Length: 485
Ligand code: 5AD
Ligand code: SF4
Image 1 (tube, rainbow, N blue to C red):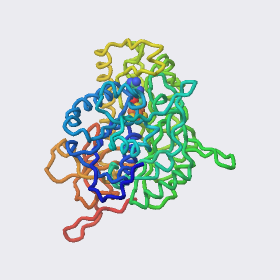
Image 2 (cartoon, rainbow, N blue to C red):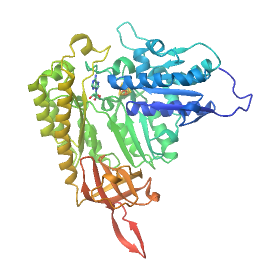
Image 3 (cartoon, rainbow, N blue to C red):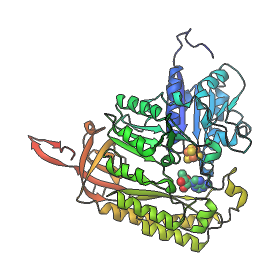
Image 4 (cartoon, rainbow, N blue to C red):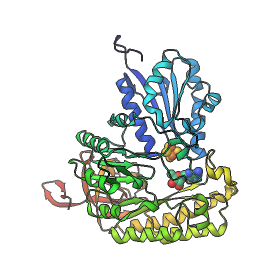
């Protein structure tokens, strides 16, 4: 590697854009942490950058199109300044590989999600004038990806507060990859086989984050509730065990985990959520469809009945739990009656919210090989809108049920939803999330940011609770927030 220590050169500027899931946000944080050690600092001005990085997503075509058009737009920057290094990282890098160089010849590095620890080295090489570089994980004989670089454990320990949602909220990877192979999904092909990180590495990272002032951690895994690690003495260490241990860490006051696979929603996990007060009573458990035939072709390995049984078990175990879901509409062979079954499931399930996606055929997936993408775009769109309208009505009803009640909110910062408040009075407003992941907006001052406050809810939309900070006493003219119960 080049020695940068000799000349006290000015800082190199890094511009980075991230699309996709929380795993990608975390990956970007880790890459930036590494590049800071190499003398980079962040810039928001792409024109001034010495390195431009895109962390990409392949889950739907739309996410890829966005990146290819961004690459098209920055071609002129490269023409003007051939020294700028352009990198494509993440899922699309793994999926498209050298195709990216063909479609965008001004790209210098292509780095898959399993090889991100190599970004600094590759950037240094191309900036020193070497030809474009690619680092992707290789496919094994059976078609699955080779195990991700062994360096990821130390790699995960470098953190970069400036890249987090807020300085007091952080993601922690507990597992990588996915072994479920749902037929529509590109993730197993781009992020490789499922691997759980050792508990000690995760706990050390959680302690480090707590020392940096983090109060809320979100444990990440493609199917986070499948987490399992075999301890040296042969015992199995599961997500419920991990939650218990993270719960013991002083300073961390709220713990979330995403995303869950329905079949792995075990009782020990539900009991841990019920019994550990710091664990958010919020579970994201994607159903994807409400039709058995579609679920079979998606290879989800459950039926609508067993999904609903699981949902009932969640609600019987954890009082006041909020559940959210994902749905794909217009999957191959989805007929009007099968879509109506999904409508039925959404109607019955009372999800806090659902993310609804139009099916996007992905190269390299089983569904793309086996089934035709046979639902017309207009039909996908209509089904998407219809399902969304139903879910929105349910979310609104659910949120209105909170009017008059008190919620505990971790204050994240100034609100962008301010002007959406019915009868908005123009005061400064803050936003944060409740323990069940609902968004709350209320009047307040900046010193509440990073604090937990109790908020009395007095209005609601489908996505937001509106209220005011609860006060129990008045000292002179200042109102003090109540102590959380
Ligand atoms: N097309 C549309 N949506 C998809 N998802 C995953 N793969 C696809 C696809 N090929 C959705 C699923 C998943 C969420 C992250 O994205 O609902 O839960
Ligand atoms: Fe995340 Fe999947 Fe998109 Fe990769 S393809 S960024 S794992 S959502």
